[in-house]
Image 1 (cartoon, helix red, strand yellow):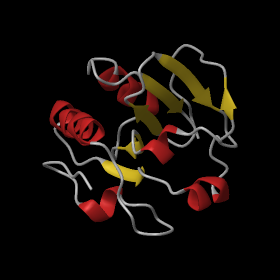
Image 2 (tube, rainbow, N blue to C red; image 1 turned 30 degrees about the vertical axis):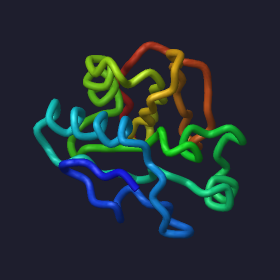
Image 3 (cartoon, rainbow, N blue to C red; image 1 turned 120 degrees about the vertical axis):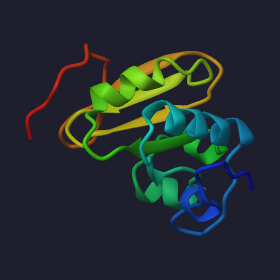
Length: 134
C-alpha cells in the first residue's frame, strides 16, 4: 500500500476492488515524473486486480497486476512530450505511448520495453514519436 508525495492511495488503487498494491518503486517514479513536468499528473490506472485487468483487456502478465505500472496523462501535454520526460527518469524501463489518447504507460520492469497504442487502444510496435491531430 505504497503512496507517493503527490499521489493518494485512492488514485493508485484498483478501480474494481479498491486495493492498492503499487510498489514503492512505482510511487517514487510517479513522484519523479510529477516533479519533472511541474504540473499535476492524472493517473488513469495503476494497480489492477486480475478481474479489472481482464475487464480492460490488459495483458495476461500485465505490470499493472504486479503494482509496477501506471497509465498517466498531463493536461496540455502530448504523449510524445510525456514519453520524452519518462525517458529521462532512469527507473522507468517500460513505456507505452498512446498518441491518440494523449497518455503513456510507465512501468518499472527489469528490462527496457517500448511500444505504442493505435487509435483503438490496441498495442502496436514502437514507432518514432510524432504529434497526432485528433
